[in-house]
Image 1: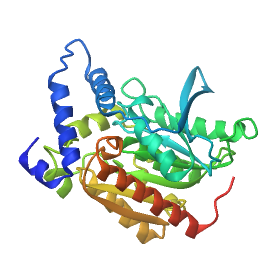
Image 2 (image 1 turned 45 degrees about the horizontal axis):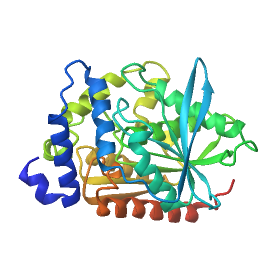
Image 3 (image 1 turned 90 degrees about the vertical axis):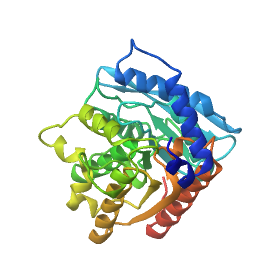
Image 4 (image 1 turned 60 degrees about the vertical axis):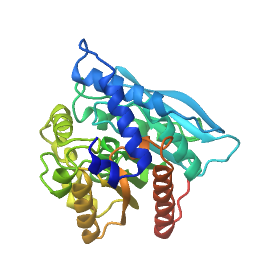
Length: 326
């Protein structure tokens, strides 16, 4: 951790990054591949700061897909009548992260929004390259439509969101649904937290926050490489921000970047382009935050405040567009 990072970011996040760096140094895993080591470290990081929220009911569900099952986990405030269903896609470079690493975030999202939050454990790289994770998202959306009347959170219109790689997948799913409508649950709103949208970026934030702020350009390059470069129709969904004809028709979208994140500039450039096209998108920048701050809510009150602010602004944006009902 550099002194620059410590002085410019939220002190609680700075301490958390230092703890994560020490955890990394104290966890030798010479027998593990890069992907397996990053997954193990993400699990240990989540355990280190995990602080369950009281009054949140969690339950696992299993979605049948071709030759596999997709595990999803629901989060709901105890005794509350859910407003909507928010499908959440976890971050981790499409390679790392799972339901457990994002328990804190999903519990807070359920608390902040009043929605049932449904976290999806999509297939990850390098074992499953793009568009496999996106295909899993589409399967879950179809399942939510098919299960109407059988599960209380199943609906024909849902909200969709994600952090980091999950935000990329959420946007890709929205673009894919606009381009190829089906009878799956329709995406009625997007909540995107610091998404990666373009490989091989060279911009100010990529250079300024390259070291000492968590995510590095080298790690991001590895994640993009392992995601793969698909051909044909799937190639356009790899960089969904470039699909201008579909972006115009996005549902109400709230995009939040982190002020000290290598991905900040590419996400904000997309937001400005989408707004210029006329998409109902609102952009917020979270000051003093680093990439991944949304999964550090148990460690940082400032990070919690920023996620709550995003949820409130998103709800207002959706309300201005049209009433949302099941």
